[in-house]
Image (cartoon, rainbow, N blue to C red; front, side, top):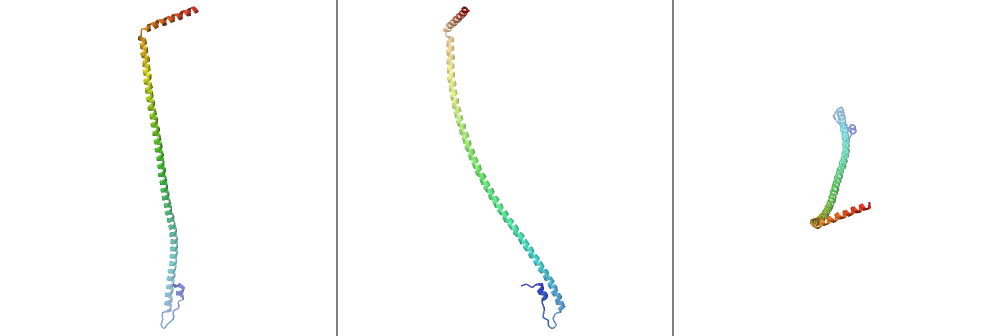
Length: 170
């Protein structure tokens, strides 16, 4: 067990023949006691300071651990969000590709249908032109025919008869 200032103060030396000067020894012991008390106080203050700093270090160590855990959680969350975003992007792309394929398929189907309708209209137009040409040719032939004059006479006679009937009825 270490010496205390009280131990030093109470220390009695045996006296011998022609020993040390008692006042000088007591003065020296008083100085040793003062210095020793000062060293003990400083030691106590330093121990308190070490305890305080150890406590603060523990506090900051806990904060550091908490921050590290938070960073890890944030990184894991960011990775998960990134993975989910990539999955969602892939799903959106697949859906867009399916829609694009459907739209293209529908457009091709409509295009084929319209092409068939155009061909049908061309065919009908050809038939109509042919029939119209035949009708016009028949009408021209009729106009060029000599019987036309005979028809004109018949129509004139019919008109005259109608006029006479109208006159007689009046």
